[in-house]
Length: 136
Image (cartoon, rainbow, N blue to C red):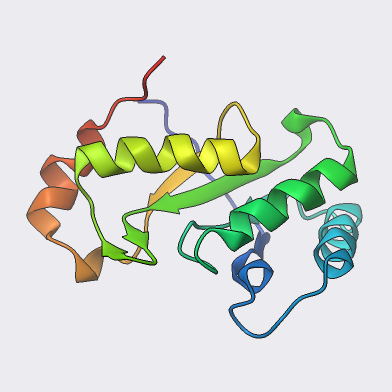
């Protein structure tokens, strides 16, 4: 496993893109992501939990509209917490990242985080979640 220090990173939190705090128009996310990127923010964080996958779908459109090369920004998403509840099983985590990649229309995410592990089985998170494998 390759480890990298994030340093003093300022990121763009994607929960509002999932209408978590109120409805967001179709153009607001594009303008927000563009302004963030132009201001030097290149770390975008989302989750399938935010808006029941809406945040990932909206972020995909905003990044596409941005038109920046993929290697110029970092995308993080999460696994384990979903609209339906918590599931940190290796099978669900594998399916989750595949679904997130499809929604984000990306070949990879830079960071995958376990979402709200305190509500799951710590034993499962430690012994199973990290054992998932992406299917080629």
